[in-house]
Amino acid sequence: MPIESTVFSQVMVLLPLHEFRKCVNRYHGNHKVQSFTCMDQFLCMAFAELTYRESLRDIEACLRAMAPRLYHMGIRGRVARSTLADANEMRDWRIYADFAQVLIAQAKVLYAKEDFGVELNATVYALDSTTIDLCLSLFPWARFRRTKAAVKMHTLLNLRGSIPEFIVISNGKLHDVNILDVLIPQPGSYYIMDRGYVDFARLYPFQRTGAFFVTRAKRRLKFRRRYSHPVDRTTGVRSDQTIVLTGVNTAKDYPMPLRRIHYVDPETGKGLIFLTNDMLLPAIVIAQLYKARWYVELFFKWIKQHLRIKAFYGTSENAVKTQLWISVCVYLLVAILKKRMVLSYSMNTILQILSLTLFEKTQISQVFDRQNYTNEYDNTSNQLELLGL
Image (cartoon, rainbow, N blue to C red; front, side):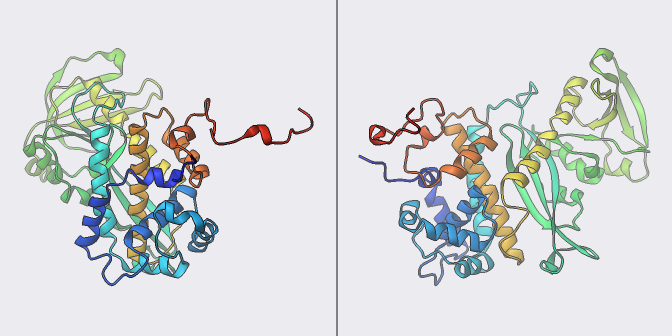
C-alpha cells in the first residue's frame, strides 16, 4: 500500500496544533477569514523557508504546480500571491512569536543534556545581535542611517543545542545594551556577552538575582585590585584578580567585587581581559565559556545562509517580523526533528535533504537513511537498462 503523506506533512506533524490554535485565538488571527487561515499562511511560509523560494510569485508557482498534493500537506486554502501578501501584511506577527516560544520550550527539554564543549552543569546563554540590512526606499519605517534601513535581531542563545530562547526584533538604531532592560536573568545561569553590553547599572541585577555573567572589560576601566589569585600560566591565564570599581559612576552602579582575568589565547597569541561576577570557577573555564560565545555567531551565520531572512516577501513592519518569526519556528522545527529522529546529520545537511524531498511520498526515516534508502513500492525489474549495463 503506497504511503499517502508527503515528507512535508510528516515534518509538520511535529507541530503542536492545539498550541498553535491558542496563539491564533489570542490575537484573533482567523477573524472573518473564510479560506486562507493562519495555518495555511504558516505552512506556505514554512515551505518557502525550507525550499529557498525567492518571492511570493515563486511560492505561488511552486505550490500550484503541486496542487493535487496540497491537501495532504495540510494546506486547505487556495494559494495565491495576493492572498499570502495580505496575510503577511495584516495578521499579527505576535501569533508566530508566541508559537516560537512554544517550540523553544519543546526544544529546550530535548537538548537539556547536550554538550557544548565546557564541563559545566549550569545553563549557559550567549547574548548578541545581528543586523539585517534593508532598502530604505522599500522599508522607510526601519530607518537606520541617512541612506540605509535595517532591523536588529537580538538573540539569547542556549548553548546546549544552540536553541534561541529569547528574541527581540528591533529597528537598527537600538543599541545592544538596551536589551538588558527587558532580559530577566535566571538564578544560577551564565550569560556570555561581548563588551558592547558592559553597563554596570544593567549588569548589577545579575548579581542580585544570583545569575552570572562573563564579558570583556572595556579599555580604561577604573578599578582597584584587592587580591591576586595563583594561576597556571601554561593554560594561557596570566592573572586572576578580585577587583572593585573606582569610577565615579561605576562604583555606585556596581558596588560589589568583580573578578578580572587576563588570558592569552595560545592559538592566536591575542590577549583578552574578562570580567565576571563568578568567584569560584577556575579561570580557564571562564575563558572557555567566553570562547563558546562563538556559537551565537554561528547561529546567525546559519540562519542567514539557509533561511529567508535576507530577502523579504513583504515590506511592512508586520510582514518582516512575521517572516523572521516563522524562520525561527522553522529552525526550531528542524532542531526538534533532528533530536526526535536521533539524526547524526548537521542542521545544514538536514535542511538540504528536506529541500529536495518535501513532495516525496515516502517514510521520512528512509529519506535520512542514505545507505539503505529503497522504495519498496518501486518495481525496478520493469525499467529499461541503460546502454546495456
